[in-house]
Image (cartoon, rainbow, N blue to C red; front, side, top):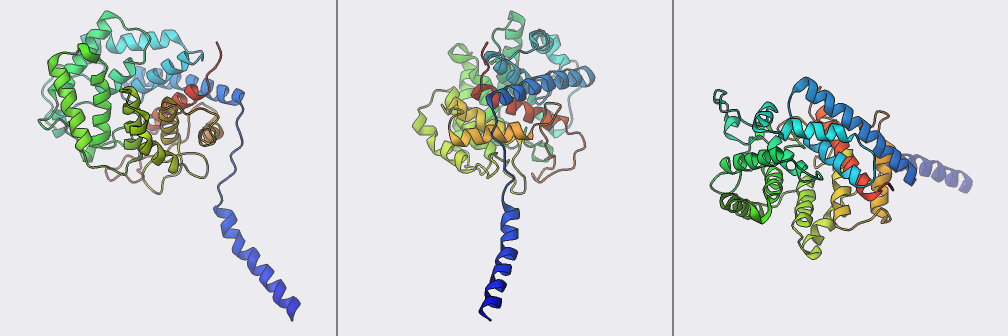
Amino acid sequence: MARTSSFAWFLLGLCLSRPALAAQPTSIPRATTQQVHQTVDRAIGYMQTESAAWLNTRKCAACHHAPMPLWALSEAERQGYAIDKKFVADTTESLLGSKDKLMASKIFPNPADPPDPRPQGRGLNMGLPFLAVAAQSLPSLKEGQKQSLKLIAEEIVKKQQPDGSWEFFATLRRPPINESQTTDAAWIIMALEGAGPDAPELQREALSKAIAWLDAAKPSHLHQDKVLKVLMGVRSAKPRKTMQPTIDELLALQRADGGWSQTVPELKSDAFATGQTLYVLSLAGFTAERPEIKRGIDFLVATQKPDGSWPMISRSTPDGSPGSSKLMTPITCAASSWAALGLARLVPKEN
C-alpha cells in the first residue's frame, strides 16, 4: 500500500510540474560580440533599404521611416559600424535642404494648400520634432538644413497651447510612435532643446512652458514615458540621483526572456521597448557587462529576423490594445531603429 501511495504521489508531481515547466521562458542563448556586430550590420542593411523604399514610394518623411533610421544610422557610424554615408547625406538633404524640400516631405504645412478642415489640422505633425531630434545626431548640417530646423521650431511654437502642451488626438494616435500627449511632449521638448541657449526668446519661453507642463502632468504607467524621462534627463545633464528611481523601475520591468515589453499587459517582449530601454540605460552609464543589459542584448540578437528587422505586432487601435493593421513596416522599421541604437551603443565596433 505504501508503494502504491508513493508512486501515486510521484505521478501527481509529474502532472503538476508540466504547467510550471511550460510557463518557463524559452532559453535565450548568450550572444558573442561577433554575433552582436553581425546583428547590427543586418539592421543597418534593413534600415537603409526600407527607409529608401518608403521615401521613394510614399514621398513622406514619416517618423518611423526617416528620422528614426537616420538617428540609428548616425549612432551606428559613431560606434564604428559601416553605413551608407551617401544615403544618409542624400536623405538628410532631401528632407531638410530647403523650405521647399521640407514642404515636399509632407510633414511641414504648405501655405499654398487649402486649410485642413479635420480636427488634427490644428495639431502638430509629429514628424517635425522627430526629424529635429534625429538631425541633432548628425555630425554636421549645411546652412539650408539649419534654416529648415529653425522653421520646424517656429511651427512647433506656433502650435503650442496656452498651458504649454500640444493638442493630442486620441482617436488618431499611432502607438507606440505617438502613444500619448506626454510622450509627444517629450519629443517636442527634445526638439526645442536642440537650438540651445541661442534660441529665440519665443522658443525659449515655449520650451520653459512645455517643461513645466510635462513636469506637472499626472504620472503614467506607460513604459515609454519612463524611457523618455531618462532620455531627457541624460540629454539635459540631470544628476544621476534624480533619474535613479525611474531607472530602477525600468530594470524591474525586464521580463524573464531578457527583453522589455510595451505597456499593454498582453504584449510580449519586443524590439521597440527593449531597444529603447537598452539605449537610454547605456546613456545613463550602463555597460554590456551588467547582467540585465547582457540579457537584453541576448534577447535582441536571438529574435532578429534574417532580413535584419525584428518581428512586431500592430498596436494601431485608439484604446492601445493589439490592433489589426496590415501595414507592419512602420512599427517594424521604428523597432529595428531602436534595437540598432541600443546594440550599437552597448557593443561598438572597432574602426
